[in-house]
Length: 90
Image (tube, rainbow, N blue to C red; front, side, top):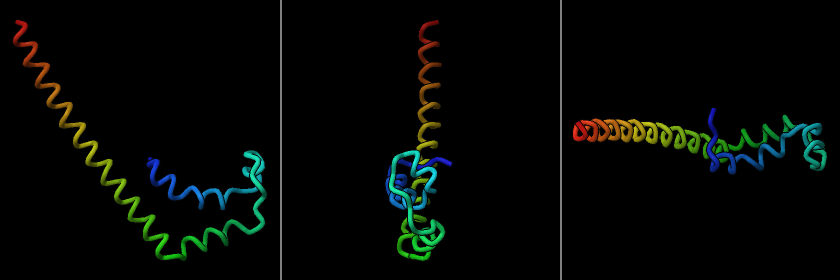
C-alpha cells in the first residue's frame, strides 16, 4: 500500500512510539518503557485522531485515482499527437 509523504508525516509520531525496543536500539532511540499495545490503543481509541487519519487516507486514495485518470488522459493525448506527427511526416 502506498503511503503519501503527508500521511507518513501525520503518523510518524505514532509509528515512533510503537516501535519495538529492538528496532529502537538499531536506530539509537531511547528504549520504550510502556507496552506498545497500550500506546496503540490510546491512539485508536481517540476518535478525533483516528477519524482524521481515516479521512486523510480516503483523500489520498481519491487523489491517486484522479492522478491515474489524468495520466491516462495525458497518454491518450500524446498518442493522438504522435499519430498526427507521423501522418504529417508521410
